[in-house]
Image (tube, rainbow, N blue to C red):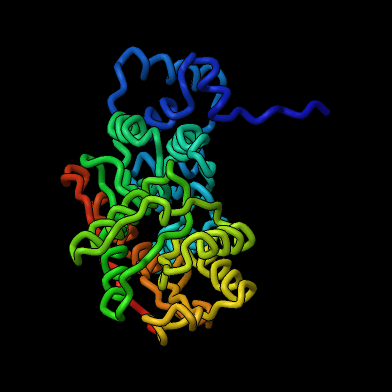
Length: 342
């Protein structure tokens, strides 16, 4: 007995000569679709005998109850925790979350967005810095899909965006070290291409200048997010600049590598003996990439932006955008807090 092939939305798109997203919009009645395009899609549906499934029926009724979430890289602790907070909040509201990854450099963001739209999601959240943010915003507008960005750095003014305040976080942790008596403070970690790092280094430099302390460009050291590389970079930095008494670390991995580097080089980590070089003591402070309860026990201070709480705020924002399709885009900044001072 011959097996009849199930006709899919992809078949309809191919026959009509349009994208899958366009077929989805015709099925849902959303978006700005020309009459000619709509007729072509409907003719393909009739020709192929495409059966509009329960999902399409729910779309015609207004909402599917599904939110799309595209995360640049789920292996990054910050975005993993943010996603957990967002999913927990949305599921408590009876929503279902489609989760996918857009690539560490955002190389798959556009394709993932189109795929989610083709599935008829009610809204999309994009977590991670995105070079194509403007194009994604325009796609969302064309498809009448609410779109919210969640990022560790700012990159567009006219999108719905929730992000940490990296400048304030850097100012907070640097000022904390200064008020503990440190005047020779270095920076370790991150890559120059990172906007998050640029914002943090900017806050660090501004705070040094505010207190009349010297800024040494050779005290700002790049390195990969690797304990081994951070350990080696800090050891080299202190060999060439033994008067440094404190180091601000780009994230928790760099901080732990720096701490190991101190131990291996015969230095200690802590606040005592700030004015004595012979104590060989360096204070460490870092930006936390994990929840407060998961911070390491190494003696250092942390500044934290609660990623899970940020995810909860993003969930509220996307639901609001779904309820109020014409609401204006807002740029919301999550404040940092200083924790675990040693």
